[in-house]
Length: 135
Ligand code: THU
Image 1 (cartoon, protein in one colour):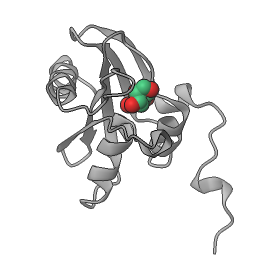
Image 2: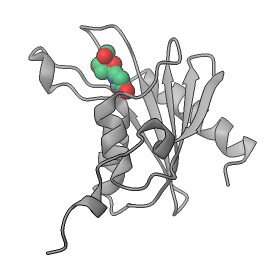
Image 3: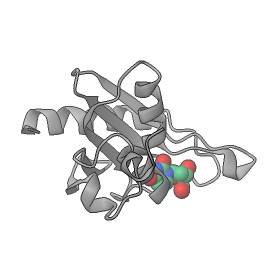
Image 4: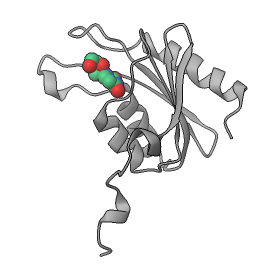
């Protein structure tokens, strides 16, 4: 269950992380904070590149940091932007891999949560591990 304290902690962590966003092209800075079932929080920022398509979103950085440290069970992720923008399709897909129950908190840079929604609601009919035949 996501408590108010957790909401606040995740949003505050994402706000703090956002300062490290590397977004010299879009000037759209994004911060994310991912809470794992083990209780750890992994943050992430968007990292752009002069070769535009090679940049990566904040949410995926947070997920990849967590997974590369052995984490696979996620409770919630906060995403902070200047205007409360929602996670892109690629990030929804990457998050969906690890569970459709993950709660997504979508907030603005002042910490106002615009939307609280599950991954399953953000990505209905998601293609996932269940769709691949067992090998
Ligand atoms: N961005 C994210 O970090 N997360 C999203 O879910 C949407 C978009 C980044 C990618 C790019 O660096 C900038 O925001 C503008 O698209």
